[in-house]
Length: 114
Image (cartoon, rainbow, N blue to C red; front, side, top):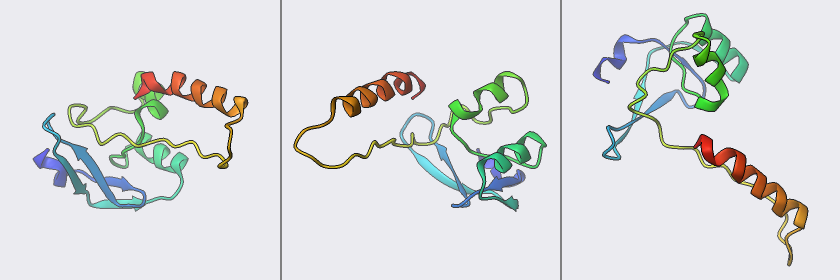
């Protein structure tokens, strides 16, 4: 992890990349020298595939690229803090059965990925 300054990053906003600790719960934000800054996730991934630098993105989104060898996971032993997912719906006295079924479905399909 100490060699992070030797790598070039592709950054989105914010520019720091979060690196998880060694299991002790320590989280570090590391700023890589950035060659390119982007605001679009497809451009972000395309530049990483072309070798422009390191990126940090949800594992499930790029699992196909990793499996096909287009991207390589770096520092898998130091994962970032999981990002929360929220479901927002209007406050009412009773939750719609459709919304409840949708929330249950989301939990079912997303739980194994996190």
